[in-house]
Image (cartoon, rainbow, N blue to C red; front, top):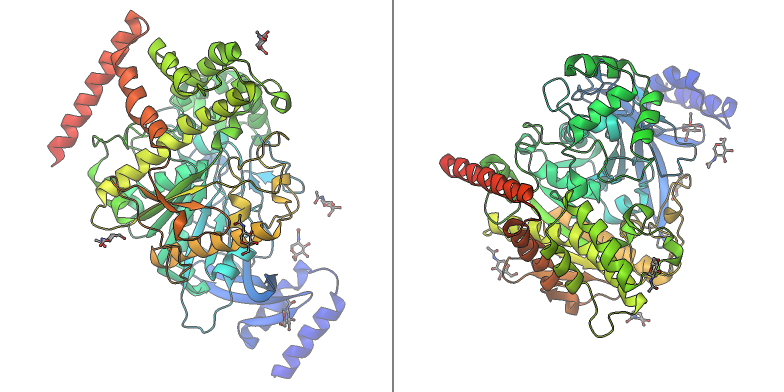
Length: 624
Ligand SMILES: *[C@@H]1O[C@H](CO)[C@@H](O)[C@H](O)[C@H]1NC(C)=O
Ligand SMILES: *[C@@H]1O[C@H](CO)[C@@H](O)[C@H](O)[C@H]1NC(C)=O
Ligand SMILES: *[C@@H]1O[C@H](CO)[C@@H](O)[C@H](O)[C@H]1NC(C)=O
Ligand SMILES: *[C@@H]1O[C@H](CO)[C@@H](O)[C@H](O)[C@H]1NC(C)=O
Ligand SMILES: *[C@@H]1O[C@H](CO)[C@@H](O)[C@H](O)[C@H]1NC(C)=O
Ligand SMILES: *[C@@H]1O[C@H](CO)[C@@H](O)[C@H](O)[C@H]1NC(C)=O
């Protein structure tokens, strides 16, 4: 019997040497049942698992990294939700109930629709995009349970997709299961009319559903449901924080890693979402007088057309925040996200509880601000950018503050910012001014949020020792990443990703993933993977694979952090990074924003917001 089956497989292989043929799928699957879990068909080995939604077939491959060969099981393109199309557009995702036949999970799905800066290569986009991918290293025994890490991509809630994060090295070298998935972005993920017709945040609900799918199904892939970490970068990092505050995720994951991004940043929310929905409606010639009709009409606009309208009114990509970003919908986000991490509590109690219980590792890299060297922020020619003092003070600082606060700021804020971001030993030196420009953006948008997040978490979970901070500062050998200017030599926003993913890339997309690492970069990549996967396994980045670094947990008073660099030792564990400028943004500027106003109208506005704040505070106190 077994021999016959092998013979059939062999014949299929012969007639099917070059290409895997769909027509063979049915025969082959029955073969799989007889042979057990792994067999060889065509050019690759197949593995098969029974999940709650049905049978899923994946590929078995060898991965060689650092002279070691590992076996990995990959399952690409697993649907975790029904296609969010037709009536389901602008709605919460609906879970995928069951597969009507075994799924050959050999290929990535479509990316979600987007107005993109990525070179998509052969990647196609479609609204039917809610799929996930699993990278599971082969286990020593059937009883071994592996820690699981679920990656959320960044891209300003406007673009991004899972395929480019190739996790072969991270999964095998770290011996963890990696899951990547697509969530809806741009108008499809975040359009909101501010009422029940289209509340918004579908992309965040997609993320939650993917996390739930992993929790419910990963055990059959060898995953440990008690050790699930959600991690992400940039908007993916802000997403991680949104998920850690959502009480519906209680018990679904235990740890979180937030890389370069948190809530409260100007790009992590768009309060004008409903106005933008109206504007989109008028471009699409919909009836904009009532939201029910508007949404019904927008549901009928072909995806391609929607994409054109969005690019039209957002000046291509050159808009921040995304016109359709997360929105305070009262359900997924039911708190004032801008002030959620201020020291006075405004967070709902159940959000505080889940947030405190989740182990958190978070950090930034040295020059996050590089990503803002763009025409829309006053830098018309990034490659030859060398601003003089007048231009810095009169143009660049005001554009920056306007973007950060979304409204004109008091003159005192402008003056303080200019004073703080000037190298007073040589204030007119244009190279210094350029450096300070990058620091100003990085501190205002990423560093301030980092410390708010850390302090809130460390305070709420003070008895747990479960907050870790890192700072990544190096001069990489590779160039051409997210900051393609030749004068830029430091690490720019997003350039921790190649290190974390072992310098793998899918070869079809962004150039920054096509980087060949030098030996020290490859070694540091290995260190990244050890620290990150240690944390995923135990909640402590020092264990079980002890690198003799002795990374000390962060508390509000000690402020320990790990300085990630080449050749790390315990001397890399330091304290009080960039505190003066962090305080500038978290203490001084908010104080100035409150106490001074530009005009009578804005004084009125600050009075109103002070009253609202007082009201929320009183309401919160009443809960206790
Ligand atoms: C993986 O490597 C093993 C030997 O270590 C070999 O027998 C097997 O055929 C390889 N599998 C693939 C898919 O290349
Ligand atoms: C799907 O993956 C298989 C195996 O990697 C490949 O041979 C095939 O061309 C892919 N199909 C598509 C439609 O990309
Ligand atoms: C896209 O696919 C075609 C056909 O498979 C191939 O020739 C081409 O090189 C691919 N392009 C990229 C950028 O991968
Ligand atoms: C400063 O830079 C601006 C913008 O590049 C330029 O228009 C202006 O002439 C410069 N001023 C001086 C004094 O060089
Ligand atoms: C927290 O960590 C510090 C330093 O690593 C240690 O001294 C302290 O005992 C820990 N506290 C708890 C509650 O584990
Ligand atoms: C890092 O360590 C390697 C070998 O261990 C050594 O060759 C190199 O000089 C060190 N680099 C730095 C910056 O200390």
